[in-house]
View 1 (spheres, rainbow, N blue to C red):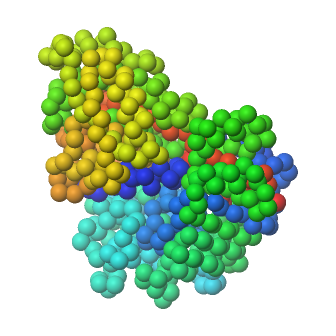
View 2: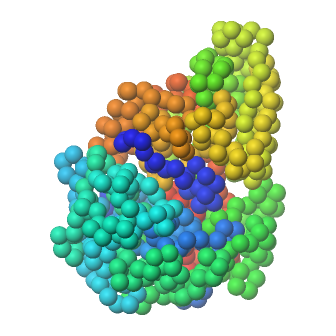
View 3: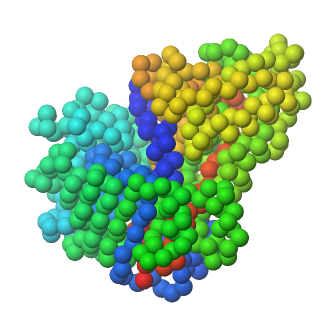
Length: 579
């Protein structure tokens, strides 16, 4: 990776949680109906073949802010942006693991790389049109990307700034009329990207909303979010209070012949946000009136709600289960004593009681134990390992043995930093569970809770980072790259900004392997290498993986064709029907 990179900065925030709430080589015919599903990833919905028509209501806690493709993360908004904004490539819209594949969208294929994967060429499909009937061109995609570099439109993913030649210094088309020379458009249907380093995963990057076409003549700058020009099956007809209510209706010029992924069954999508999570779940449970045709993309069932739902067969049939590439873990700063001693870090790894942590996180229905840093999904290159086997309840005797070898025969005292936000995975409940487990191994833990903003600022500061704290990471796309590189690539250590390499690892062999994997355009081969690298890094005990979250969400009784992929972990609105 280049240095210093800001890759995946946003996914360390709670936004990744509310997404999940944040890779196949050919287009498929779209997802099969899940009406006959067995309840694995999606839910069955009501019986009968999905039909076009009706209104789908979305009940969310978080508003769909900054509805501009330049300012959005691909994962933001629980699939809502994907209804309006098409991109060069997109995620495969199928249940479970199949949905972790990347497939073409506006482009005819996943792109043609140069021999060293530093140049990527895409050709657009025939017949692509905006909501006003005008043709979508490659120049529109180039302009859409360039405007995402403007300071007033910040907030989107940082990869293009990192990867494109000249991207780090480019200020956007409002200041630099010449544009980015590293993006070429030799004709209306061809776009070529010139990168400053090999990037075999560029097809994943091409799913980011920044590759949405924007007609220059229709660009209204910061006001564009009020009525962005649609390239997808729906157009914006109402945007109240910066995304608090977003109403979408059909884009008559969208053609299903050019879009194999989005089914676009409902005539209208009504997104209502800013709602209390308890109210959302109550409304979906009752499923009355418009709520019978409603879903949520950011509100989980809590432990008590899930217990109630599980006791009602009809309600239980309306629960969608999702998995998103996400890991909750303990992080160590080896620059702070006693965590500079590997045996101390190993002792804590052995002492952890994952059963109690999972209970604190809501129980086994909402959390799965983790012993690997990479999520337990094939697309990430998941390779099972457990270097410091603690069993389900911790191995206190092994931990004491290691502490003695480390020079602490009578145990030691440490401070664990966590967030005071009780709805967060770094909550006081999880910290307390760890405190009790480590006590059995002779480790006295003092808990230091910080308010969420202070917590985030502290753990992401190279100068203020504590020695022992709770952390979490989610991927921008289902691959080991955006998981391992930001956390373990030594060239991504940031001394004067947001730093995510919490262990300050700068291992030449690790950095080199990251570069070598990035050259691979065979995504399956790359996944295997990412898994092997995860296993190698895990030996250093710079983190203690704790659990991967599971997402349980209700949907209304009239919702059909429930599809939940491992890319997002949330119900895919583009597949849902209400008739």
